[in-house]
Image (cartoon, rainbow, N blue to C red; front, side, top):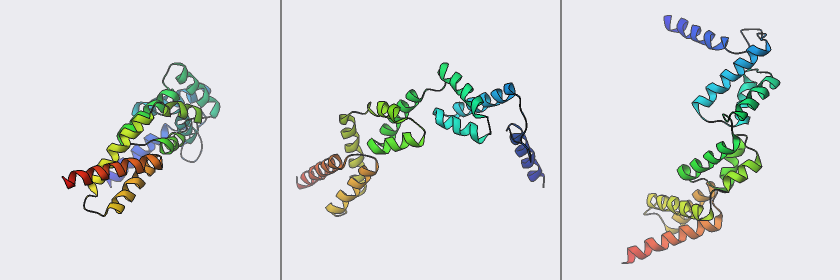
Amino acid sequence: MAFGAGAGARSRHRAGSRLEGPGQPKVLGPAQAEELARSIALRLLTAAPKSRAQLEEALAKRLVPPDVAKKVLDRFEEVGLVDDQAYADMLVRTRHTERGLTGPALAAELRRRGIDDQVAAQAMAQVSLDDQAGRAEALAAKKLAATQGLDYQVRLRRTVAMLARKGYPSGLALEVTRRLLDQEAGADAE
């Protein structure tokens, strides 16, 4: 019983920082609403970088008036706390390096996070064709190692499909996978 009471107290404490209370919305003055919006946005940015659209969505969920959210986020952009281009650049670098995403898969990831198409295109331009080919080869080699012992066609199909899901062009995926399978066959023949 004591556990439930403690959890309820914590829940009430968290709800107190929101604009709405139990039953009725709290009426906050402009300065209070702005301070709450600033606090929410800073807490979110402390946890992880966010796009302006993600912050706008979070503030809207907390019932921050749109004009207050705009004012706070405009100020955050002025001082460099919110920078969609830098965020998109970082996201493209990490998703390409760590997960091997490229092309349409990266574009979809950026779109989900509310990044403008023009900003996304600039960020995606930092991944060259050579970078894509090198990363595709590394991913294909890893997949082929995991499918060793299976039929050639099965390995080819699974590897090309994996690369396609990550956004690699089908021609590149097929070329890289065939080359690695041929190299593997040549090494086995020796």
